[in-house]
Image (cartoon, rainbow, N blue to C red; front, side, top):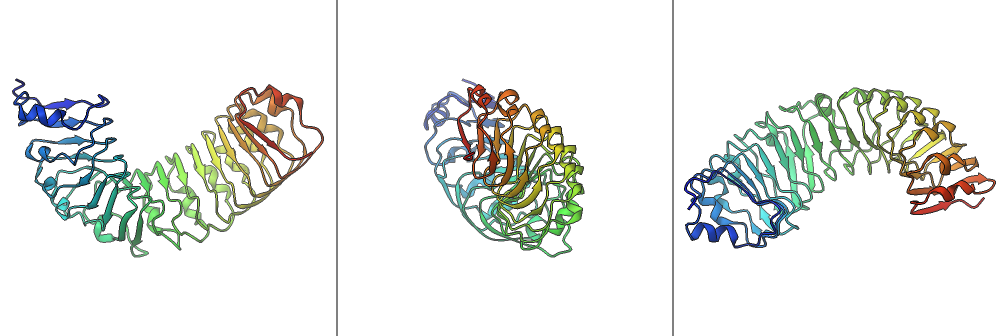
Length: 382
């Protein structure tokens, strides 16, 4: 018999529902000192395991990526030492409301409930020192998130409440009590104005707020928000105005997604300062004029999506420097001139090429046949 087991790591072991409780009931293992249990990435398809509520020593519980179902038990708040709780990725099987008693779990620093059917309102957290909250893709969460929900979350670093039906209701002068590193609030009602409180979040590395009902121009201060920003996604809004030259200040960006908005003007040449970019998605806007030569400075670029704009002119020769490109999507614009032969000669990794509905002339270059791993080619009629 294991008399004082403190950590149990059985991730990715193809476990079914009854293995752990059977060990417990058969006195094979003494769980009274257990602090860490990781059963993630298994096939446990039972109700949420009520037996863990009797293990008051637990500090870390990871039951993510199983097939758990049922409600989160009310007794979860009776685990006084619990710091980390992850019940995410359970195929939307965990349902019901979050127990209001979760507000009393003063040791909690991480809550993960991603990809479940949690419903109702988010309870206010009064005394927890949470670092990470993940409630995303729980489509039945409703109601309003107010300043009161954040008042005691002074150590919060990561917040993900995306893909819900939540409305953020805070004053224009509100200053969050925390400094976030990652903020994901896609499909939450943040607009119509651009959230002024974002000015205070200068440590962000991830800002993901698509489909947030924002319908104004991006404010000038935004482009100096955080020099550490790696991922920026403000797609599926109704953003207006032009992309300013100050976008070049975000030199750490690896993913830029401003697609499906109403942005106008040209693509600033200063985008070439963002030399770490891997993905650029500006499709379905109202951008026009020329594609800048500075695109050639983006030598790490793997995906470039510029379709469904009003871009014109020839493809800049400097684009041949983007030799890591796997996707080049320029469809439904006004590009003209011949299709460059360097696409087939130098872009050896290209897998998707979309050129249809432009004004290209001449012949389709024979060098395109060099692209042996190309999935599909949709050139315009030339």
